[in-house]
Image (cartoon, rainbow, N blue to C red):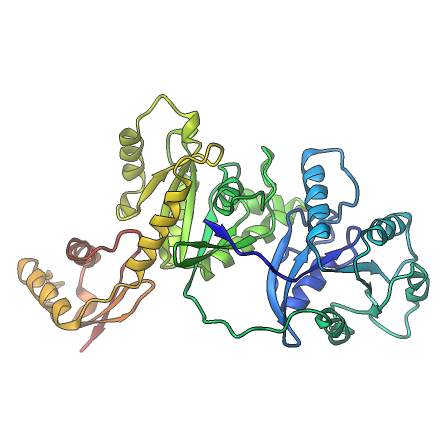
Length: 444
């Protein structure tokens, strides 16, 4: 898969808790980066291509680690920060206007001066002209222009956008490709970030053995053949009860990250549900996550990672166990991969492309009605009390997921098992592998 390059990048840097992620969200117009008062909330590079004043800009939010930390995550976050600064065409240096410059602020300034790159100094948290601020002291750091902002009250953002847009390339009208949004989901430590990195062909997301390393949604666009895929790596989803207990104990970060994951699944077309092959089974939480994707009408692909570390079970036996546990999703394709060795990584794109095609499949109305008529004659809907359902006609009303509307008399008496059998019949006639089918009954 090929990653998109040649972007004009503007990088947001600064010490922890100065409001970098809030500024990032304000500039892109949506809450993409997780925001909390806890230092070190942001770890990965969060990127978004956005049009600002008619100019196309790749905006990058970075971690607040400004020197090598004492643990693996801090070190990797610091490496990502330096990588972003090296890539950036322009820097936004964010400081906290409520307090005077700290030694850490001055160290950051020294680092940025040495890059020789154009740097916009943003003095944030200037919520009121009546309130004392330290913008004048920060101006002595020598960066120009200086823009005073308040991300909470949207003050100074228009001026900042003007400075960002200077020298940025004009937005080009592109022929819009159909982009398939793919969310990578699963429990902590199953290898979601490693899968993203393998698909991108680079270390896009921070990977460690520490559960909960990923917090924000990390995105990247890649091309596969003629298709464009928008990939999203999400935070590991633990059981809701565990997340709730952590929240009550004063650790809200995981809950906010999980809510962001749910939102990402909701906005996706297809989800890659990553499982750990070394566990040789699907857990209850895996089933819960799969159920969420199915109920949301998303295409689902099972990606069994770390297959290179498994030798005690065959793929056939593993799949048999999966099909037994995922009994309600027998239409889901599965692939065995290793993000570490690259085993079958390229084939994920082929399956995504096929599932996307199946999601958009339309059945001509005459053919659909012939299939349902034949099925109804062989499987007459059972009466409930004195009411006997009668099927009149059907039509496909939408795709992604394929949705069929059936007009019937006493439709509320139709048992769910008949609906499920009809869905299976449609799958026999047409390839709907990887996508749920929605059937809606309405009275004639």
